[in-house]
Amino acid sequence: MDAKTEIKAGNGFWSNGEGLNQIPSPYLFFSASDWSEFRADTPLTLTSEEVYRLRSSNDPISLDEVRDIYLSLSRLLSSHVESSQQLFKLRQRFLNISPDKTPFVIGVAGSVAVGKSTTARILKELLARWPSSPKVDLVTTDGFLLPNKVLMENNLMDKKGFPESYNVSELLNFLSSIKAGEASVKAPLYSHFNYDVMPDQFQIVDRPDILIFEGINVLQSRDLPVDGNAVPFVSDFFDFSIYIDAEEAIIEKWYVDRFMRLRETAFQDPGSFFHRYSKIAANEAQDIAQGLWERINLANLRENILPTRPRADLILKKGMDHLVEQVALRKL
Image 1 (cartoon, one colour):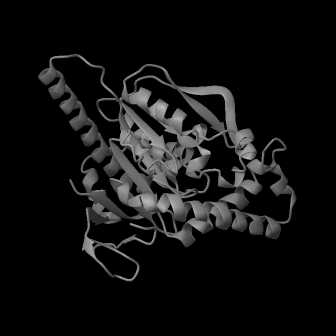
Image 2 (cartoon, rainbow, N blue to C red; image 1 turned 135 degrees about the vertical axis):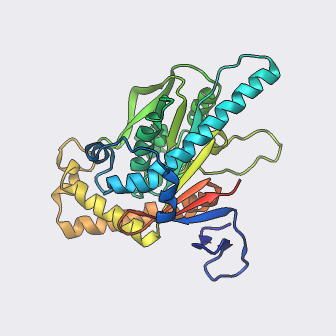
């Protein structure tokens, strides 16, 4: 399926943009109000202050949105985790062995500026507050980007965020270690302030019950080798995957708005990689943001990110106000 493939709300079909070649959809579709009913009597333990702290500056998620969308989602995910744990116990008895339990891994994908980080942080907090009090960790793929020096040497700075800009072997080794149940696995850290990987700085992931792995290309696949050797994809390590979706024009506006907001805040710091953009006129900065979107982020969305959407287990479709308007859940 190419990047023009659309999920049409409510009609139960995959369809191309012209409504041709319809085939049965593997998804069930729910409006935001219908989806909110699945939270049942689950109590919301997050406060308005906590939601404000967890959300990104350009993502005006509210307590009501958390209650209606993400509480239901956390309930669904919790049931998947419990089922996975039960299957682990059954297999343990069947094989008569005592292997280490491995984390339940949730992938969160989608374009830049679409709200992946907020979704991941909200889910982390909600899942950790379920009665079983699971240990939940969150890791982003930013730390697995190649250092700027390497990107410059290979003329890839304008491809930052594209699949070729990542240290794929390091990324796959990390996930392999996580799924092998190893203790104290290191994940490299990234600084958005410096716009670069932080040398010799790591996040330690020590056998969590749940790992949320967030990044724009986590559902990306690669060409298979002709010799039949195993080529793992990042998504091969996921137990559940989520894609955050919105129309191109909406994401473009969010991206440009975020750039202009950062120009008035974080970019003002002389140490910021993007400090130079705080010193130019607003209209010039807007043109630069538009150019960055069209040349890099839109190209990445169309070529690499959007084509992975049909691989997700669940798709959250947002409207202009950043609120989720539709939920698509893959059928079992």
